[in-house]
Length: 163
Length: 455
Image (cartoon, rainbow over all chains, first blue to last red; front, side):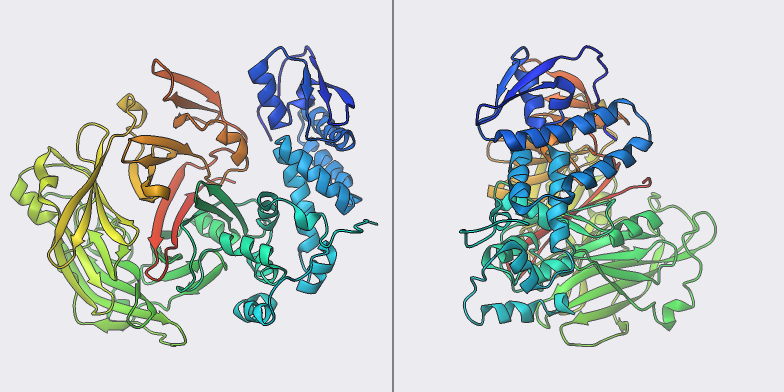
């Protein structure tokens, strides 16, 4: 997978402070799975306390939990780790409700956790696949805001999608 | 399970457009068609991501990147880059093409791509990358069929080949595929003692709206000049254009070059060929190196024969009078030549705000001819677009399997940096770029397809 895993054995600890003041102490190798933090570490160097005013503690915790799992699994570089990661990812997104999913996505996006965003967007996509328009609306609690007739017209234009 | 009480739309429905686009990009074209009907916002996201419809829709410039995919389903990613849009399509169908290695890309028009079979030149097909639809064209008709079994055998005897060009006839609102069948005699394509091709015949296949014409129809004319195999048709203003000389070559004498280097045009409605001349000053240097490009529906010629890294762009002012106008000169960032010598430079098409999109080595850059400013663009089938954007001010010059060489244009001294390639970054060597422009709307299309051998 990614070739850029750190090889240093000294584990530096970073403090991450969430919007609600909750702080997390994490190994640098874990936190730098998040692009945003990786950038800050590279730019600011010695700064050990990183404030993340846009992320709530609850979700930051979840994001970090995910990072930790992936960082750990990546260190003992084995082929089987991909499987482990996949299994763990599946577990991670399995029971997320929409509210959590939303906030996690926002947090992961803000922190540039590309892989996590990928995982979460895939989860949302899986909630759309195979559904009818009405079912999609219901799932996402979306009200149609088309003018009368407009929807019919779009349906007609996209009739291939309804076959 | 989930509690979404007061809000009229669920939280997930209110994700920022950027994230919704990411989600949508994981869905098949078919589901996307349905999602248009969900609500206005979603419809808009899908529409902006799918600029190719049959001519008639309107949208801004859009750029497509076709990338090899690990996913089963075709995926599309919309990527905003200023006002221009990238659409990354990962296509199973397309990667199958790429892997088989049997088809090569001829040209594209309005988002439809035309491929020809490498070995059996009677076979060609069209691909709509968005719907994943492949339209197989019927094999060539009798006149050519008899001659069509031997294929690309280089050093013995003569062989046949076809040149295809896909264009749109606005008079009948149909797509037309032109096929020129050639007999080529012993020798190499670029031998000095003139070409030894003879065109056997020309046929046209019409693919239309409601019109069901399902066979090749021979026409009476053949191109007045052979079309080199590697010459790719450029479709603008109702004409297909091929250049007759295509590789960089030293200039022997101006007169000779004037005779040898022409543009063969084909008028899609009138169905006739014509020769037009290149701008005369193209032959002023020591080397001939140029290519054609579609700049928003206008035929342009990019002259790269100067020895420095500059390019001159000529546009066709008047097709009938064969009047060329020099539009601009590009001063490209200059590097030690050895670093890019093995890569091509070319203009792909127009970019936002009068800029141009260029392929420079393995990098894509946008270039503003007015102030000679350029910017690196990373969008090629990248898994980690965001990460690679961090390298925005560096130009990728050369890469090996694990590291690549970046150039920092802003550094005070010209500096080279060796950088680890981010994961998923440029795992493909060959990048194929093409661009089309629609007559009916402002939409345009760039398709970049990394045809890879591995994975």
